[in-house]
Length: 154
Image 1 (tube, rainbow, N blue to C red):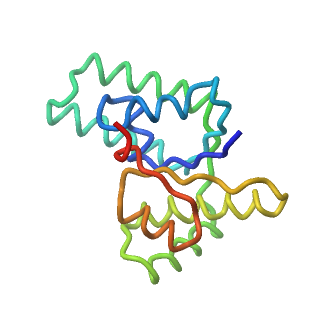
Image 2 (spheres, rainbow, N blue to C red; image 1 turned 30 degrees about the horizontal axis):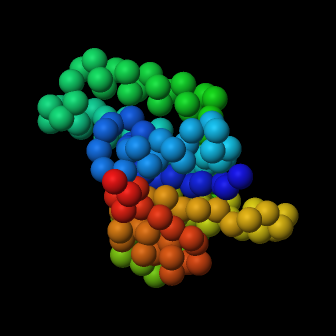
């Protein structure tokens, strides 16, 4: 079993068909046995991404509704969340000093680093950080995380 940390750019591929969707769905399949962790703010970010796609017309209303319902169900049953607390905020601020990240990306990376440290503290394997954002993956790699991008998998 691998602990996979997914930011919203990776997780959205589960709900909207695009490059990397089949690969990501394989990672998230129950048979794969992977644990899925993300930041609580992903709930807002993913909803924002779906609403934006609906407004732009790249998904229709029915597909958007199905995606939102599936995401809400997965949030309740499959995903583990890192809450935004002062430790995550402090680490995110430090990351912004070291890397050219957007604010929410810094929160995502800080959340992943927090989970990774907790795993290492109990001698579990490190997590795998998944993002479709190259800049965020570069920062995660510099911070010592193993990374992968769904965009690298057709």
